Length: 71
Image (cartoon, rainbow, N blue to C red; front, side, top):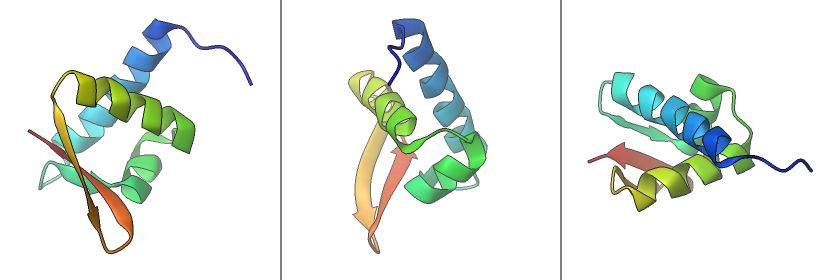
């Protein structure tokens, strides 16, 4: 495991935000976020924490997948 800097978390958050922003519904399931960003699950979770802390996303469950939506 490597130690990541705060800037790295911000970069990951930006990638997830962009993927959500360009989707038709401004929302994606975790699997589609992973496919769109090529980030690892842990990196996506860190990005979601960043975006959640900033109040930019809402997270819910849908058919056994985590769904993230921009607010």
